[in-house]
Structures are given as C-alpha cells and as structure tokens.
Length: 371
Length: 112
Image (cartoon, rainbow over all chains, first blue to last red; front, side):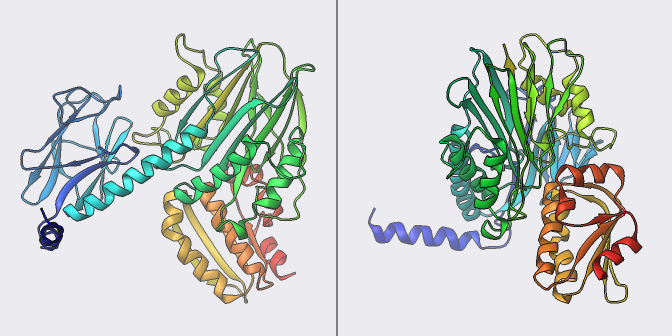
C-alpha cells in the first residue's frame, strides 16, 4: 500500500467517527493500568464474573463466578445482577433487577469499579495510547520501590495500591552505613501525574542519599533540607507529608521525625499495644522558615514497625462511619494470619471494612520486623 | 459539599458543610478560591459542619491563605469538631492558618 493510500484510509475512518451515533459504549476499569482495561459492550452484552467464561474476568474474592450482566437496551446500557453473593452497585446503590447504567456512572463489583464511557473509535485509540504511557509511568514508579526483604535482622514487607493510575505515595528503606537502617514514606497531596512526579523526585534523592549538606542520619535535618528544596510555590502548589526514621541497631534506638504526617506504630512482640511513633512538624513545602524537630524511641527485640500513608485509614466503612487512625490501630492489633504477610492482612482488612469499590486515596503500608 | 459566602463587615465568611474529600475538592475548589481571594480582604471559614478534610482539602485551604497573604489579608478558621481538629493538628496546619473555637475569635484574629 502506498503512503498516499494509507493516509486516505485513516482520514476516512476519522470522518466516520465524527458521525453522531458512532460512539461505542465502553466499561473501563478505574483502578487498573493494564492496556486491556477497556471493554466495548456490543449487542450481545457482557457478562462479568470471577472466572471464565465471563467476558470480563475480575480476580477478586468478593466477585462471584457469574456476577452480573451488562447489555444494550436501545442505545442505553442496563445492568442485571446474576444472584451474586456480595451484590452489584451503580454509583453506590445496590442493583435490584435490571437498572440503567448511565454514561459516567460507576459500576462497583467487589473491590473493582468500572466506569461507563461512550467513545468514538478515534478516542479509544488515543485513550489506549495514553493508557500505555501511564502504564509505563506506573511501572517505573513501582520499580523504584524497594523489594521486600524476607531475611536479615530487619525484615520489610509492604503493600502499595494507588487509588488512581498514578499515585502520590512513595517509600523506601535500606542500610545507611554501619548499624544504621533508614525508612521513609512520602505522601504528596492528591494523586495523578503531578503528585507522582514530585514523589519520584523526592524518593530519588532519598534513595541516593544526595540531599545537599545534609546528615541523612538526622531526621530533622532531612526534613529541613526537603522543606527548603520543595516549596509549594516552586512545585505547582503541591506539598507533601512525610515520616522519616533511622534505626541504630547497636543501641536498638529509632530516631524519627514526621512532617505533617501521622504517627507510625511500634508493636512489641506480645502485641499488647501499638506505640505511636510520631511528632508534630509542619507539612513540607508550606513554610520556608519552618523548623523541624525529631524524637527517639527504644525498639524492643521482636518488635514490628508500621509506617503508612493516610489512605490506609481515611476510609468510610460500610456503616457510613469515617475511620480515624484509632480504627487502623485496632486492626493492627488483631491476630496475625498464618501464611499471610502483615501488609496483605491489613490491606484485606481495610478493604473488608470499607464501602465497596477502590479506596479513596493511595494505600501505602510498610512493615518492618526487627530481630 | 455545601458552601456559602457572606460579608461580615468587610470580612469574607465562608461556611463549609460535609466532607472535604478529594472528590468534593475538585468540585468546589475553583469557586472557593474565586469567592475569597479576588476580594483581597480578610476571610474566615466556618468548619462546624465539616466532617472530614482530606489532604487535597488542606491544600485548598493553605493555597487560599497564602494567596490572601500576598494581599496582606489574614485568613482564619473556626468551629472544627474533634475529628477534623485531629487532622488539622496532625498536619500542624495551625502553624500556617490560625484555627480558633468561635466566629468572634476568628474575626478578631483576622481584623486585629
């Protein structure tokens, strides 16, 4: 095919796309960066379930094998629940019988949500390209996160679930010279590309220990330098909160500082209590002249440290009640589950408590287990 | 999220109600800022009926306070319930924006 012919065919296709009525009804997974997150609903409809032969397979224990059916009725989409165990919801309202699924509405199934969009083929192609770029960006951010460390004197594991395709949370941990181990968590206000870019910038500097004229062993110094470097006026009005701690193995002592961030929790081996490990400092980026303080806590042998973003506990539960950090503290102190890591246990516990669908904010949780 | 604005003797008074979460901030931020900042006069925000503030809500409040500061106008908040006050204290927002108990105290802060 010559270049001219190729060009002509594309032009015709785009012209057709602009004809009214040429739009396709799509169901798009909201909390998903996969390239196959979009599903076009054709005349035969789409069955959604946990296993094939469902057309959309959602690997979620709260999704029934044959959960619901979405089909065209005239030029509108409707959804029917297929007797699922946990129900199907449209914009938070449980589906009884067959109900309309308006354009822009959210279809909630288990922990997954799909949005009804109407798009031309050209829009789908453009959106697919954007999805691929976001997928690459998301993979890059995930690659910067440290791998879990199941062995050694300090064993770390984590759970990280962005609420959008790009989140604003980042965290890291690792050795910081002899006998020292550093842990930190950054939570940029909001999510999306802007928040993710700021989180990556800060995390990169912390990973490489390249803050200028800063003793990385001093949490207060680290926060002070970051506050100088990342003022909101220079960062598109973005700010972030942060928890930063340095553990000295020889003295079993943790130096820490929190900037606008809630406390972490230290849980002794008998799991009788969760000790708040935090102090009050202003958020990073709002006050150029701010000073930052730090504190210390002794770490008994066998303790666990939980460092997390506010998205972990700022949920609305199934009774419509806003959670506070005290609710998450209670969840931490519940019995651990064999064969399940602490981050996964807590992620599951939060999902079970929250209203159906994706969480409102990024979920980031790092758990360090000390010898 | 509910939002109302009045003028109290040359002070803009904003009354917010409901959840100031990520979703509602997207809906109200432009109107909130546009109703306060261009007037270049002191402003107070009634948080009595606010049940929750997410980080983006904090950003909206800080951004408004900083914009007013550039016009040498003060900004204060009042009436936060215990749950909202816990969020405000955790973020040390009180170091940036005065948060007091009553409307009278807030008016005194911004006009004093």
